[in-house]
Length: 431
Image 1 (cartoon, rainbow, N blue to C red):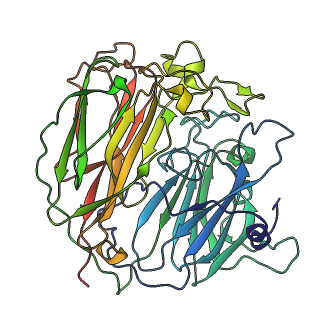
Image 2: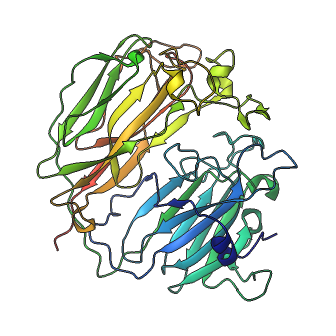
Image 3: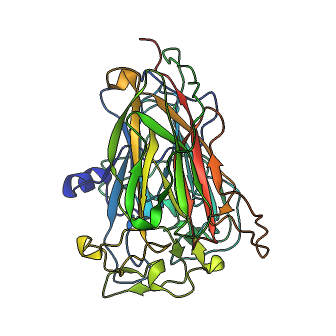
């Protein structure tokens, strides 16, 4: 059942604006450099809850807005709701609305973090594990200005144009079509489980495409101890292409950084800090603290079967330039009451990302970042784990040639798993 028409909600609430944070996998023919002008961007509005969604007293609806690039921008972007860099982070979605959507825009909704459409059978209502793979919905817009009046996710189990009206009757959905859907189990599994929104905008004759950059090989930098709780980043105008770490939290770490000819970086702020030991699915909601207990508050932090990755990926068209870990000054972080950091896997982690420009920073000189797929997992310590069939390795990860780092994921302690996300770069198109 729709909760309220989106316009009235937008007027009543202070909005959380997300400029398509966290880019996803893109086919090689999708890129943009010069985006066609438009008076207004399209909007996708998600509504849901935060906190304990199993509580009957939790009735507060939280909105999150995703801005959609105009027609002809020729991009595919993933918005991942479980990414700490996303401003939609932590929202358990119930309903969706769209306003002023560009024509021929495709929107994929799934409960899989990587927007995969493979269905499974397991389900966890309280949390949102990667094993929740119970639905996918493919939407497509028709004419310019397409609109979807707020509709529950679980109601989009039909094929054809949406014709729902707002409760007041003064709005009706226009030119938004459900092209296809798939589900496993009952429709109620679709509520509070949305993990990924993939938005693909159209290509037209005005679209201009730049060329891929060629990057020089990067040597490993000076070794340092991550457990000492410092923020390390590449030198000015350099970007990360790899990370080397083998051993426990006291072992050395090295970054591989490189510069790109004629390209300058504009660094963003350091991200929020989070405990990279992962999301414990067996953690109970703490009513006094109004949150789930974190991994460092629980015993057996090396419990693989009950621990989900913390995936971090840079916002759209940004790349990774730094990482911090192992802070041990709890008095400086009063907003986090989960205990002292020990400089180990329970320590807080954060990242720094940057936008890239070929020339004076502007939208017309901005470099396009095209992420690929997450790497296969390896143990952080480099040790073999026979129980899970992970081989011993040298602790090195470097992106493939001509690619840069844009994301990292981890769960558990140093004998648990780490994954990385790399991306190719396209130059701005000629003006």
